[in-house]
Length: 261
Image 1 (cartoon, rainbow, N blue to C red):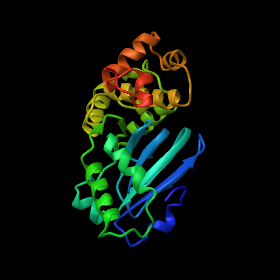
Image 2 (image 1 turned 135 degrees about the vertical axis):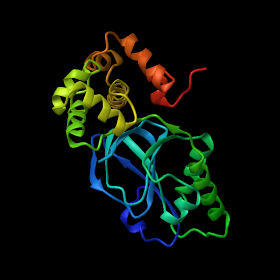
Image 3 (image 1 turned 30 degrees about the vertical axis):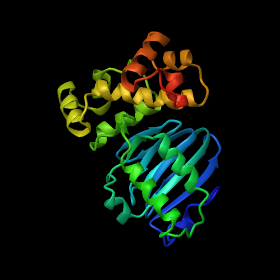
Image 4 (image 1 turned 90 degrees about the vertical axis):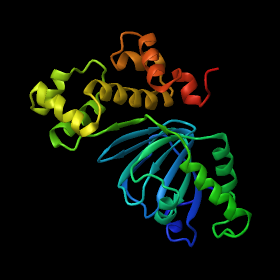
């Protein structure tokens, strides 16, 4: 079902519904939730997903899983073509999709299944070929590898406020002492609380947050040199090295979904 609205299909009598839509760059869907889980595949462009628990970045040819009932905001970077698989809570539980948001890699088979599914009628035959295709589609989604494209937000309001300010003005040069002062905590208390509530050190979180912002800006067509220097890296090569170390590929290859040989 191409270029379709979401709401009319929330109550459709099928456990899996697939839609496809084109969106303009910069479009934001304010906080909302679905009664079904949403597997959002960025066929083109980049999608930013935010919840009270953190931020996820979906580059081209990757996807994000948002479980049913989770309030989330979505913003488009560059023109976006989004293919959505809306999965009933019962079906999501059957294939053991997680109860939290995450970003996934997308296999060639899954892309082919999505392309097939968007041309099926809304009330497809569950006992025929279409039903088998949808079952395979959901099984393939559940087998996809999770990707490290998430910056969690601490539950402590002071830490979360400081982290949101870093999101607004990201820089790899923002130090631990600066963040602790921003939160009104001692260095020791900040370090302990931050790791307890996010599961990572502040240095790891800061790098992740900067890389998420970098992917978003690069997706909009900004030059690597500009992005690297804006984020406080000493040079474009230092930025590219950090990018490849964390995400496993160069910025240009990563954003086109191509793998280095």
